[in-house]
Amino acid sequence: MIPHKKLALAGLALALLAGAATSRASSHMDAPLITLDPAANTTDVYAFVDQGGSAKNLVVALGVYPFEEPGIGPNKYNFDDNVLYEIHLALGTNYTVGKVDLSYQFRFTTHFKNPNTILQSYLGVIADVNDANQNLTQTYTVTKMDFRKNHSHKPVVLGQGIVPPNNQGIATPKYNQSDDGENPARDGVATEGELDHYTKQAITNLSGGYVAFAGQRDDGFYGDIQAIFDLVQLRNPGHDNQGGYNLHLMALEIPISELGGDQQVVGVYATTSRKQLKILRDGTGNFRNSSPQIAGQWIQVARQGNPLFNEGLVAIADKDLYSRTSPEQDAQLFKKYALTPELAHLLNALVFGSSVAPETNRTDIAGIFIPDLIKVDLSTGPARLAGGGPNHPTNPDDAGYSRLGIFGGDTLTSAIQPGFGSGTLPGGWPNGRRFGDDVVDIAVTALISDLRVSPPVIRGPAGDNVNTNDMAYNKVFPYESTPQNGRNHQHHGGL
Image (cartoon, rainbow, N blue to C red; front, side, top):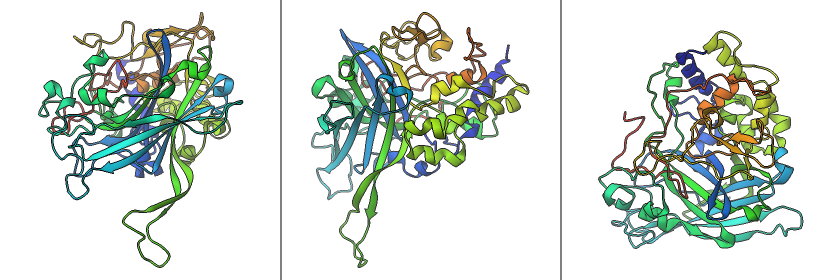
């Protein structure tokens, strides 16, 4: 039995390998260069099976722009018109090698109703999305790229959507409790009818049965990152260092019929790209106009698959390389970091003082992270979802849900894989990733356990004393929590 304090240390030690030496470091700041480009900086990728009536869907989501301070102004955090945001899927057996079959592109365009004012975002109280008082409005286009055989490989525009306003407070009262901008943001809800007014208006039905959303949300990742970088001085309870911060989220509900059926495992990851050139002035030294000229090919600047891989396993020397490469190269370039994880050695040396975590030939860890795609078994039933905890009065977690997934007894049954016997698979990450999965605790528990043997040797579960998000999740699309109110919010567990 591992003492509780050591379990907490194990959870917190996960971030000791992070490349960015900052009190805001998390899986949101995986590589040095991308921290300088927050609009293209990926935070988290989610992918899980859900079901509406008789139709089964794959839900995928990508977060960008970490640590958005709610209510900042006059310029707000927004999607970048000059970034190509993409969510990629590897189908059939291609998930084993990281080869992309489908890509879904989000491109944004920013409009101002009145550019001759300092009131950039809000000219007054916003009653409806894109009304006369929403000065800054972003629209987006979702395009499908199909690289499968016997497909045209031509871009197919699925449709367009509109981004709701950020949650400022008085200007955006309908995000907040009792539709009052002085109050904190609304809690997560269990039904579509209970969603806040702006979110409901911004959910967009696309062609082919797709559903999309893009907009500001609460940051649903949670963990006591500050304590790690404060000389690993732990506290109980821990503080959610993403607490009180927002991000920008793109979510897409994909009919599984679009993917060729549910008898397969799908791999999911995301990238952001920028154009090769930015021209600020011409060769004579004169400015061309008031805006930079963007030209050239798209160049990938970031990617994200499983949580914590680039941050927690890849050495500093290769972190930026990871951002520029694709999962097809992971076996060659990065598998060594999963097979011999330095983090396992650090846990043994700094936390346990003995060889608790296996340090070599970690084929079980490589099976999770190489190639670095979130692997989702589509043959299972829908994933159990987090709400506001098991005892929430109106939005409890689904029965059987555990933030620890399989380590908490939350499992699903596969029709196509043996899993851990009789098709038993994790109910959450690393079989997909749901909003609410405690990925820090799951990852450390996997590292100190031995999943290579049957039955597996489970040690833990390990923890960092942060076991829940500061906001309840929605159990309906777009799932991520309501954005924090810029006028009324708290950071770091109330500090």
